[in-house]
Image (cartoon, rainbow, N blue to C red):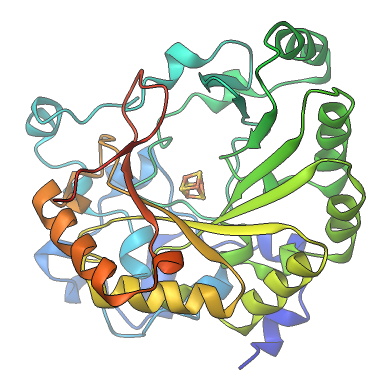
Length: 343
Ligand code: SF4
């Protein structure tokens, strides 16, 4: 069913009306703070450190009265995030689990892998995912400005192996179409750049973001466009998402999904199987299934490698090969993602 209430609302007004008050979220879901079990208690400290932020449309997909709803658990600031910080640190959880500050060569630019650079053109996201490995990232010092473009362009020219630009989180689709077009135009002026890849959660949480102006921008660039959406659970996807993906697929945007394996959210093969089928219905192929990056505040989402391997083996048996995402870990300083050894 299309959610017509939101189908008619433009994405900008939805972005300006996000829920940022935990009490409002609890009230909308008929959950009172006193009803939450000890595992779900709100942490004001966690909320202050990484604010609750969630679109109303996404909240309509959560089950009311269910404190274990897999979408709710992804956004609610838990007391577990701040618990046993010493233990978290000893277990390898840090503020910069992927060593990104090291790879932060120029403002807003990360160069980790040989053939591609990653740009954070904004620090803003429509949703704050509690497990986000960039939840402590110093975006404010890392927003590339127009005056930085010459240095970025020169860096790319000096590294002829770079042929792909990744626009990533913050969410690159949270900026205006004008700003996005400006960056795409800059990159396509460099002949060595063949592909522009957008990593985004916006088409999942506010599908109306895929508007006509964006379609025009993406259909007129000479570069190949890849969009990697980010969904962890089939309940996140609805008919509005299908409409958005159809529009993109009709202009030949290549559509992939990446997920993070999260305890209590999608740590079983049934949920992941359903997600793969649901994505495929919307013309999206499962790309990566990441094990959790060890960011401080997210330790309660961690499952062991052995558990991940067991889930993955079941997925392999259940699904056609093209529906099985690659199970990978990203490690600081590695020149590629590392597939988990599953046998
Ligand atoms: S960057 Fe992606 S994973 Fe991180 S908070 Fe934003 S939308 Fe969520």
